[in-house]
Structure formats: structure tokens, C-alpha cells
Length: 407
Ligand SMILES: *Cc1c(COP(=O)(O)O)cnc(C)c1O
Image (cartoon, rainbow, N blue to C red):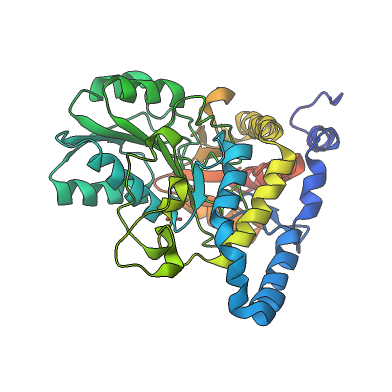
């Protein structure tokens, strides 16, 4: 490791890059502007070079030349890409993950199926810091079904604690659902313990993995997770609007029913039969014609993450966020910043939030200085430190420019 003594120096960050086993992965992405400090890969991941060629081939040869004959091959993509994400990145078994639709739609479908599987129970447990789309979907479901939402109000930095969940869960709860990594603070929920608590009360547990897939190991099989959804355009680098994934634990696949009975979930969909007869297993969670360009782009992004390995990705995410926190402590506390993410690395995902009353304006001024971050109201500047594409010197440069602005 580094022999540079001053941990706030650029030389220290350079030494970390020199020792970084994932450093070569950055060369596998399109980087047009070498001076751009891109710290927003948790909103939209960068474009893999392999994806450019793959999409060109798909559009020019497969769509342009094969035309409808492409459907001889394309129907296998949702399950194949699902298995790649499932087995390499979230610890699922083959046949438990499929790529389809958006995270929002998948969340709605899995939550609906879970509520249907717990008739007579009248409550849903989630937290007020959960991602907006999840909260809105739950509000709609609760209204339509006459259910109550038990809202937890966790610490905005530390996120929901096991003790908070334990208080809220009883045998009237049908569904417990949380984000694994919080989108604002990056706090990591205690997925094993919370899943166990839900199960002990007889509830089903649904996790949103949008900010954890390809940044934090999840271990869905190991921890007995029932259901999960996640996004593919963040750390998976699938591109804007790329299709999401959903996971249904194998033991639940017979019991839970996809509430949208579309023809792509049908056993022999080209037979165009009179009655819905779903495919066995995870394939039943398809709905309509999938986006083939989206699927191949997700496949290329997921391949890169799988090649890097989730443990190496996690180790680098910890190191990147540690560097950022160290620089925050040294430089940014005096001008009024505070850390909006957990200090304990085990409780933190791959981004950090720095809170400041003028956070919105400062984010805009960073953009003028070629540093892309994002702002989450009321006061959090988020630095997304995507381990395959973010260098330690990018962290240093981004925070150095913020120090100059705020000083
Ligand atoms: C990004 C994200 C989503 C995205 O949902 P879409 O349907 O793709 O818009 C959902 N949940 C969480 C936690 C996210 O971070």
C-alpha cells in the first residue's frame, strides 16, 4: 500500500490508484472528457465500450438483417441476464431472477403478490426515508386494499434499525419492505436480521436493491430473502431506462402469482391459447415484449461487474468512501459541512452524502467546475463512487474543488 504520509494529499490518492486491482476496468468504459470528474454513477452509470459494439450489432445486424427471426434468440435474454445478475452479484440461485419492466413496476407486482399471499393481514411496514417510488406504490396499494402503512421514522443518516422494525412488526403485518442501501445516506439496512424478524411474524419481506446491486454483496439465498427488485442503470451501467430485475425465492415461486397476466408469462405463448397458463418458475414474471436493446446493454454492464467480482467491488467502494470521509473531516467541517452517511464502513454503501445548508447551490457550482454530483433535498450532496469507473484521484479532485468553493 501507500507510503505517502499525508492522507489528504493528491499523491496519497494517486498511490491508492496505483495499488488498485480494479483500476484497469476504467479503460473499458467510454470516457470522452478526461477532465470531467463524474461522481454520479449511482444515478446513471457510465457507458461500457462493449455495449457500444453490442448495440450496434443488435441494431444493424439483428434488427436490420434478421428482423423478426431475431425472436428465435431474444426470448431467452430476460432469464439469462437475470441469472447473470442473480448468481454473480446478489447471491441468488439460477432461476430466481428475471430482467423485465422498471423497478417501480416490479415493486408493484411483487408487493401485490405478497399482499395477496397474506390475506387477512392489514398492515405494511416501511420507512419514510425509503425511495419515493416505493412509498408512492405502497400508498396506492394501501388505499386500494384498505391497508394501513406503519411508517418508521429512522435517523436520516443511520437508517432503520433492527429495534425499530421489531417494534413495528406483529402478526397483522403482511409485508415488510425497505431499501437495502438508502438512496440518500447510503446507510445499509441489516438485511439478515430484518428478514428474520419479518419471517418470525409470518410476514413476507421485499427488498429494494437498486443502490446495492453491484456495490454491496446481498446474499439473498443465504439470508432467506423472499423477494427483491433492483435497478440496472446505476452501478450495473445498463444505460438510461434499462430494464430492472426482480427476484423471487424459489420456494415461493409456486405460491406467488404475477398480478399482470401477460402473454410473455404464458407457457406456450405463440399458441395464443384461450386461457392464461403461466410458465413454471421465474419466467412467469414476464409480462409483455421486453426491450431487447435494453436487455443486451444490461448484459454487457453486468458482465463487467461480474468480471470484477462483487467482493473486489465492495472493497474498493469502502476504500473510496473512506478517502472521501477523511477529506471531508480534514477540509469541509470548518466551512459547515456534516457527514450525511454512516461512519462505520460496514453500514455504508458506495456513495456518501455531505450535508450543507447551501448544498443545492454548491452542487450547481461544482457542475460549472466540471464535477458532476447530485443533490437530494433538503441538504445532501451525493458523491456516487462507482468502483469500476471512479479513481481515488477523482474523489480527491471533487472534494478539493468543493473545498475551494466552500472555503
Ligand atoms: C433508482 C431507484 C429506483 C428506480 O425506479 P424506476 O422505476 O427505474 O424509476 C427505484 N428504487 C430505488 C431504491 C432506486 O434507487
